[in-house]
Image 1 (cartoon, rainbow, N blue to C red):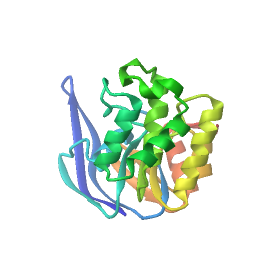
Image 2 (image 1 turned 45 degrees about the horizontal axis):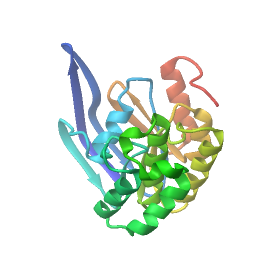
Image 3 (image 1 turned 60 degrees about the vertical axis):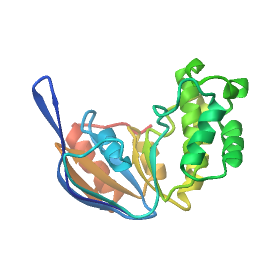
Image 4 (image 1 turned 135 degrees about the vertical axis):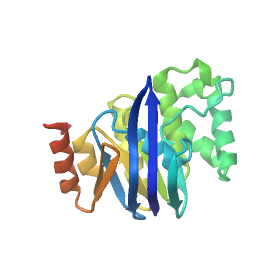
Length: 223
């Protein structure tokens, strides 16, 4: 369970104020995969970062019951001079999991070959995404924070990513940002729409999709 209480966040860029959270009060229930919908620039990724603890809110509280992941697939915390395997072990130690088992899982899943044992700064963006997603899926969380989970890799890797993610969803919940309404319908149980700093939660996913479509003034995509 994740509860947002009077959550507020405003950015000031070039003298312009951008409100991404305007006194939000919403509860994301445990064991539910919630689609976080909103137009580009609405602040969806910022909201995920606040829940993850990597971005500080201006005011309000975020109450969390159970374990919550960092935004799935985020590679920004890896050390550039450590190998993929060393970075994996480091993350495993932080979260108190079996590091050997995690390394074995990530090496098999990410399909990086010899690059798994080379420095992270030598990786392409696609390789970084594969490593990040593998590490994210290799650690069990009660709630996963997901920002375009299957966006990295070729068709086969995207399919494999969806399969392992759905396996995790059998025992966990998620807050998922995606621009694919098709993916949202396949994966999510409920929805929340972020618009002008206000977040509206819907137990009925189709109601959330309809609200989002009304906001964007058309079809947001059904691929």
